Amino acid sequence: MKSFFLSTLCTVSVSSLVLAGASLSAANWPGFRGPNHDGSSPATGLPEKFSRTDGIKWAVDMPGPAASSPAVWGDSIFVSSSRPSDQKLLAMCVDAKTGGIKWQHEVTDGYKHDDRSNLASPSPATDGKLVYFLYGTSVLVAFDFEGKEVWKRDLGKDYGNFGTQWTYSTSPVLDGDKLYIQVLQRNEAFEFNGMQKGDPNGKNESYILALEPATGKEIWRQVRASDAVAESLEAFSSPVFHTFEGKRLMLISGGDTMTGHDAETGKELWRLNSWNSAKIGHWRLVPSPVAGDGVVLACAPKKEPVFGVKLDSKGSVDPLWTSNAREVSSDVSTPSFYQGKFYVLDSDRKTLACIEPKTGDVIWRGEFPTRTKIEASPTGADGKIYVVDQLGKVFVVKAGGSAMEVLLEADFGMEGVTGTNSDNIVRAAIVPTNGMLLIRAQDRLYCVGK
Image 1 (spheres, one colour):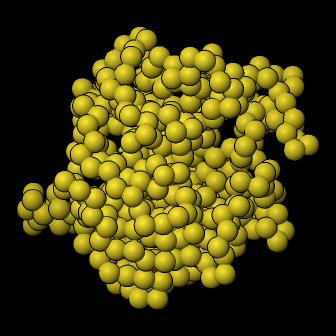
Image 2 (cartoon, one colour; image 1 turned 180 degrees about the horizontal axis):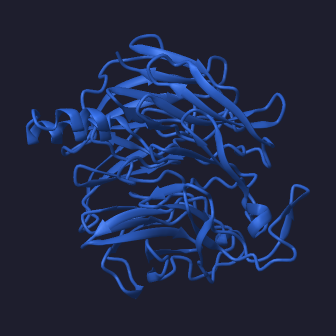
């Protein structure tokens, strides 16, 4: 791509270069929340009518279930997967044009620690040079695009076993020249389901790691303290990055609060006053933050409110606004910011709310026509919001407007599966890329498009 631009620079207009750059970014989805860290994509011209049997470019069987979303760069789709038959965790690369498997590697042993999810829950991340896979076993590995292993680390051996009761599912995040790993965990070791959680001989601190992407070497490790207790110290959110007033911020949710950090150094700049003053001990956190229009959202768990916080905050801060929890709440799904609005998905109530960032006003709120929980995060692209429930039913909603308008319903669920009481459910966000949609169902990865 670089040689193309260099060879044609003299004959291509500035406006054409801008359009080409926009097209390239629209083709890439480098990690869990996309190119903007907010669940949105500049992609346009996406398919409008499709089903499991109509409008499918290709579909490829997955070795097993996983909650992870694909990462995309050019013609390479990177997928983390489990393989229950032999308890392996896999790193895969799929050809975006054909659906063929470019390469597949067994990275580590393990399948699940509980009946809610499995150890292939973190989404991979890529910078266009290498791709990074992290698993709930604490193994982190980097491959080049040809599938050659570049480096590999076991973070549990280096920093202590992850101290989370439920399956660790935080995704690695690339930003600038660093690879970030977030571990928000309990402050003491314990046993769960016969397994050792945390480090009996360690400090069991929550921390953020900044690593050198090319080597995996530590640049810095920032302790992220919290006065939460027990399970409320645990978070399965991922760090989010956002530029505001010329400063690159790292935003972290978990441990009964949200914090803003200098992305370069990890230094804490501000902290939201706790939403758990009663020190309830079972409020683990799942949604990641999302930022837009000078505001960042934090979603308290267990049907509690959503909080809007000013990005230029300092020290201990109170929310700019607090939602009515009966109208706007999210226990699992990470909200999206798209075309100037926040979109908050309530997993349990199966509702989507369109929110005005500065005030928290609810522009509209609507309920999806499903009885199944929705835990996958919403995606904004092409003037639409894309959502999928746990049994694989896809909903396409018109972005903006004065009321929720469902444009399409399509069932991508695995035939014969009607229950959601295992890890064989859909939790991966829908990924727009290069005029296509990637939908990870229970048993297959579908590519919708021409």
